[in-house]
Length: 218
Image (cartoon, rainbow, N blue to C red; front, top):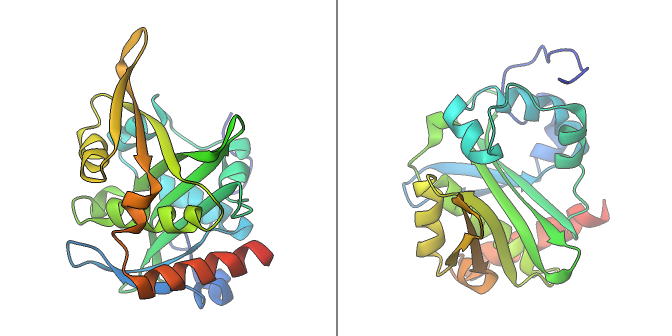
C-alpha cells in the first residue's frame, strides 16, 4: 500500500524552505569528486521530502537499495526513516546548496542491532543525477562519525552481489565480505567504523559530533 499523504506541492528533494531553521544547522563538506554539499540530521518533518527524493531514484537504484521493485515508500517505511533518535537510529541527509531551495540529494542511516549494541545496519541512497561524485562515500564516512559518538564500532549490511559500487566502497573502507548461506545473490558486509572516521579530518569530525549531539537532544 502506498502512502496516504497528498503529494507535496513543493519542489522535489529531501529538504526545502519549510524546514529553513533545520537547514540553517547544516554544515558544508566536499566530496572526493569536488561536489560541495551541506549535511544535516534527518527530522520527522522531512517525510514528504523523503518521498519526493525517492521519486528521483531510478528503478535500478531502488532495486539495489530495497532488493525488490518498489514504486512508492509506504507510510510505515517513511515514519521509520525520518524519526531517528540519533542514538540507536542515526540518520543524515545531503543537500545541494547550488539549487534554489536547496535540494536534497542523498541520505544515509544506521540502525543499532538488538543483539549487538556495538554494531549497526547501514544503508546509503543517492539520487541518480549525483552518482559517481563521491557522495555515497562522504555520507557513509559522516555516518560513521555520528555512530562512533554513541559507541557503534561496526557497520553491517546485506548488499546485492550485483551492487558493484557499494561492494567497491566496502573494499575501500577496509570492510569484509562474506556470502549469505543459501543465497548467492546477497553478500554480507562489515566495515569497522574506525576506517570511516579516519577519512574525516579532525575539524569535520568535531562538527559532525556536535551536530548530532544537539540533534539527539532536540
